[in-house]
Image (cartoon, rainbow, N blue to C red):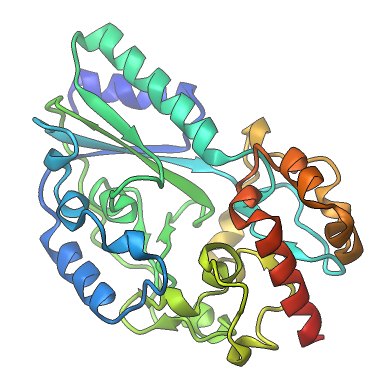
Length: 308
């Protein structure tokens, strides 16, 4: 691998990223067909933004003119401890500060340091907020395979990672795409999903996922057919990752900003209800939990209470 690519990987490690892979910019034709089929089936539910900018999603050169390479980075968010069984459940990625803010800062620093050693470089960093097929680029960059639950899985450390991409006009040596799939005949994630959101061929029906209902759905009404299936998840869901055998290799994140917010693990249902909107906004202004809004969180909480 060329010296510049090696230096970029070294810098990414210094910034705290767990993995860094590089691949050449190219249209993702096969992934485009899968995405189009997924949208045609309506699996995006009310997430209409998934239908926008289709051409940008499959061709990075339309996001960054002159783009030559995609640098994909993984950042571990697996916590040292998880919320105990008697409390309402929150996805592990939302225990600490909003990852968008943390990773954007790291991407900006990475691009700055690349420019220090490579001169003028055009580039843009993305983290879960632009039309970029992050998991596909991670696979193409040799970082892991896409599992039956739709998550990127690394052989060494499982799937509890945020994925970020830096698209640049640098010409860099490729890493080999990840060609193997180590899910094998395992179907634990499919069997464990209480809403049957995981379908064959690594297809996730987003409109049936607990994370969709507790975060993305803006309606104040959750369908009655979902009653009894939320298993106390009030924000997001980790069931398909928790049962994945590869996540026995997960190790705690070293990123202090992902440490649980003070008091989060002790929050009871009554505590959540008595917060009030102003206090909610104050406590979670730097947290992914703010996405649900207070009204949405109360909706989730009351829906769960009708299950029990």
